[in-house]
Length: 114
Length: 112
Image (cartoon, rainbow over all chains, first blue to last red; front, side, top):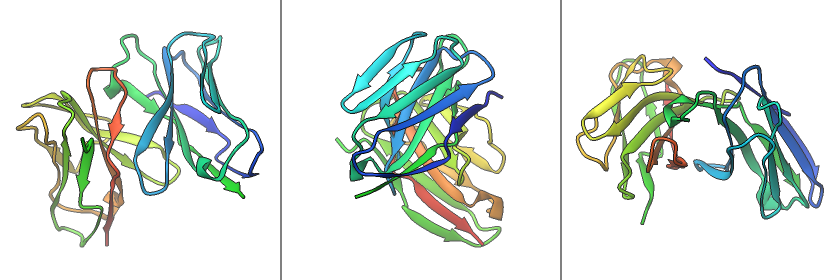
């Protein structure tokens, strides 16, 4: 099946720093999604991207759908302690984008030191 | 509006035992899914359902069974628990085929 390479695996940062993580694929994706999982909870959708080159913000979060359609980036500005969690990228490689064809990355564990 | 509710939150099973992980949603979503999450491995789809009475296998269905007798409920059954089924299990639902997934808070299962 499809595979997504997400990096870095983990990050330890100081409060106030900016964060950047990315996801790459060997094949073209038609949708890129970014989820956050708080400790002890299920993932929650942060940002959805549907078009190559698309740049979308959600508060301090900004995500981009790469022009090649094989990558996506998530940036968090001015991190705060509640940003702690696991960030997952996910995407649809097929046209139509059925959820049962959704591929998830392995996640980036973010730790923010106050 | 509780969203997606999973029970139990934690469970320890002995090898060979069986159990049912419960999942219910109150959003009237047609689509429901079961994922497992292993450390450093992301989410893998076990089974999914596009509506009451319809289920289908995902990427890792072996050792599991599901049923969907109502729109609200989508239980996951483990018949003969094995150590390889130690994982965190997430149920999710969505309004449409590619609408955002709404996840429950997970069931942490240990098989020893």
